Image 1 (cartoon, protein in one colour):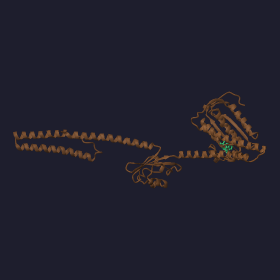
Image 2 (image 1 turned 45 degrees about the vertical axis):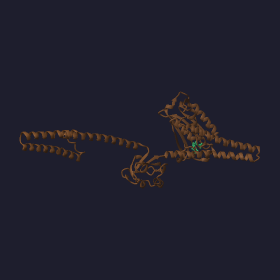
Image 3 (image 1 turned 90 degrees about the horizontal axis):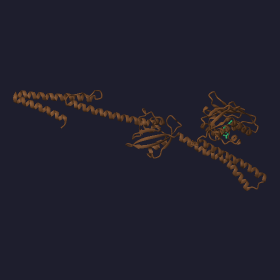
Image 4 (image 1 turned 30 degrees about the horizontal axis):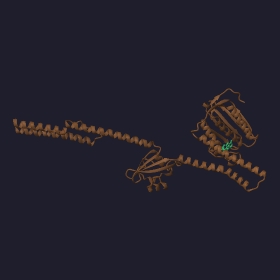
Length: 438
Ligand code: ADP
């Protein structure tokens, strides 16, 4: 028996006992009046508390639960305890839900929930950006009204979502490439997940261009070589012609060798696992050797000046730094017409950074080409580059070498007047030494 039944039964028994006592010892009327009065008090007591409960339930969120008396105090206490427990559970659920939403918001992928009529129920910030959606004003809008690209509409209608769909961004970033995939969930509802694959697409395009460029670069000397081989096989050549052809074939083979060597150097430099082999070496002998090589390459056609103000030891990969400097110097020689001047300069700035620059009075570079010069196989004038034995990979090699030494290439040029190619090595790689600079 519950506590309320027990309590009520005891009270009723007491009333009936007292009534019986009065009935027997006093007057019957008095006993009946007493019993009626007591029952009225009991009913009033319960109706009063019931009314309190009713008023509280009507405005449960605004009023505190009443205290009550007798068994009602226990009832009110149990209700308030149950409410507290529900409240705690609801708060826990709410915080779990909020954390879940925060996690989806933090996702680099777009997440959009569609109901069974393809209307937008919810989307995270990334999805809003991908599709140019306003989560509030576009709530319950049909997705087809917002993403109108025909391939998306047929993807959505096709109901075959095992493969993703690639589309261009329909939102704010027009050049973005998105990969979309739909997943079914709940009762015929859909989850639209979008991913930014612009970088992959660009890398893929670079890779395709690279393969096409390598094939193209190697095809020209290869065609020339096989042409000469055919001539030598089919025709009866004089000894003089034969040796001339062999010389030309040797030149083309050398050109292919040069391209392959540069490609291998680039791939070594781009490989993150190929750690830089640093040593400390004196810069002066290296600069003198590079200047001598430049003079040999120029064959007396240019005035070449080395201007070194400070002697230093460098902490770097000697072969890589030498190849970067040599590329810049040989470019200056190759792209400067006879009679021009080439200045090789090394000095330290106020902070102790080392600045290397090569200045020429050559043909210069039109401004629009400058940002692309370090791309593989990029040339301003293709015919001039091949004429001078260029592979189009030199500046790409320089860029990678400098990146590995925390430096970067700076190019300034005026068409028809000349160019300056320079880079700055950080102080951490430079150790000034006492040495007479020639
Ligand atoms: P290449 O082997 O063709 O010289 P690089 O990567 O070294 O390849 O140079 C890329 C292009 O930059 C060259 O084809 C040339 O058009 C331009 N270039 C580089 N250095 C100079 C320079 N000193 N003066 C003018 N143009 C230059």
